[in-house]
Length: 273
Image (cartoon, rainbow, N blue to C red; front, side):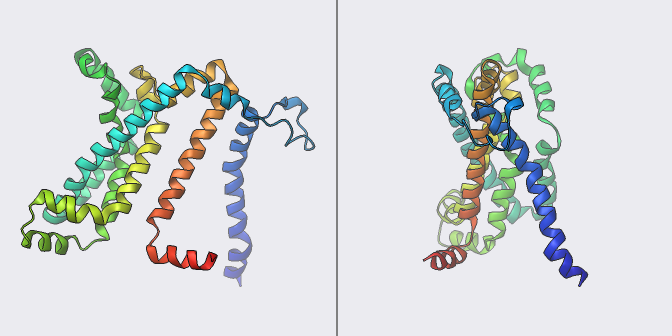
């Protein structure tokens, strides 16, 4: 009886409290950015009055918006490609040749999540006088973003490889005369499409949310533009933050749909029809 009461009453109540804890601050930020009603005049009767997307359109019309968004997309593409080129062969090699080292590699990849980004910034400031030829380029952020995304990209590729009978696939490919490069490109990568898409989407989410390193290196990325624009137009700046959060949430929803097994997707499609 106690278990039934907990499952029917307490568990949904905890979920509602947790949802309110996350949703109410977001709603307050959205109200500040998109509603033209002063806080002192806010009532239940006018909670949904005078909402407008004008602050967002004003931010979109800024000359630096397109450049900042384009730079962030370039960084996301470059970070995703380099992450795949580094991680797929490395994780395959660890699974096949160095299974005992997997825990060590996993520990190393989680360090960027444990150590705050400001630690990397301190290291960048040390080498900055000696590497201006590299750091002057806008694309110099890519190696740092590859490191920041490692906790997510590594686990995405690693989970995809765990779902495969990797040793059998590699042995069959090698017995047919394929070298290691052709085996990875033509045999392993097609079986990792879901994991690769998840890796790329997670990389985009990391790049669209990183501000500290870009600000220190004076790069006008989309998060840096949001921070600067918020100083001149708070409503528009917070509106862009909400938009970025919505886009990131949609990315994770797409990851969930793509990573769902085909059988489950087919059953859901049949159920909806």
